[in-house]
Length: 333
Image (cartoon, rainbow, N blue to C red; front, top):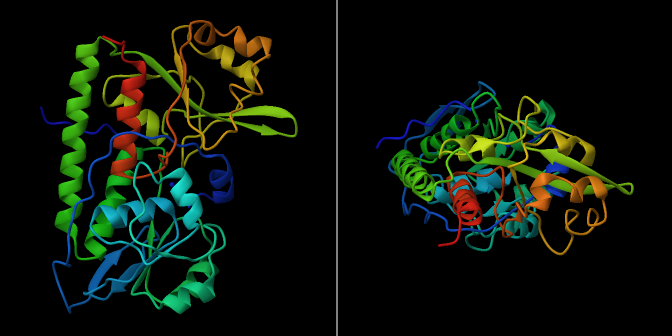
């Protein structure tokens, strides 16, 4: 069966919020596609990036700096281990299971404020960023090396945007065939997961993925609405999105409080990820009558997926998320 990825498609304008709040999980991932050398050497490559800018890149590009974690994953997927990465420790915590970091890249600062000096010290062939920085920031970076800006996210087509960014990275680094191989494997795995969902009798199950965090003594919830990458992915294998609200235009992320969760269907699964010991759902909400009275909670249909998958990542992260999700909601034999 050939899967047609349904139209449904992250640097955030507020990437610092994502760094602090985005949640992660672990699961089985597709192995990165190995591509030891570019398909074309010597001749430069010209591509058009998310800004609509033509970017001229050396044909033998090898030394690459990635300023967003999804860019790290895309590069590794086509066989390029970045020599510089923004917030290396954060990547290992939030994304390191779904798409393990390769090599020992230099830390080049945060994703919102990369260090120009650190990047200049590497003298890379290419810098890969994600839409959301101002023009001045790109200009500073372009004084060091060509800058390729990815779209990162678009709530009108989350999966297509992720795959389009991967293709752009493949083209820019002379590894277009490696990108296509990874996409083919990704879509094939979607077909396999769809068959497993159907066979397990869980097709149509409502999944409400959300982040939870404490702010000034109050628990705030960030649900993933239609247009977010995760719902687009699990809807494509037979689940439905259990969150009825709307999200933002780029990432499809909503906002609510605990009371707002009463809008969930009684049979919805609530799933979430986090890193470390801090878990607002089991800690801060343990004695909250609204939370404990939700039908999903009373039925035990609440699950924290294992740590380590970036929820705004690429093909390996999405695959790992879906594998973990299916393992969670599939009835035990």
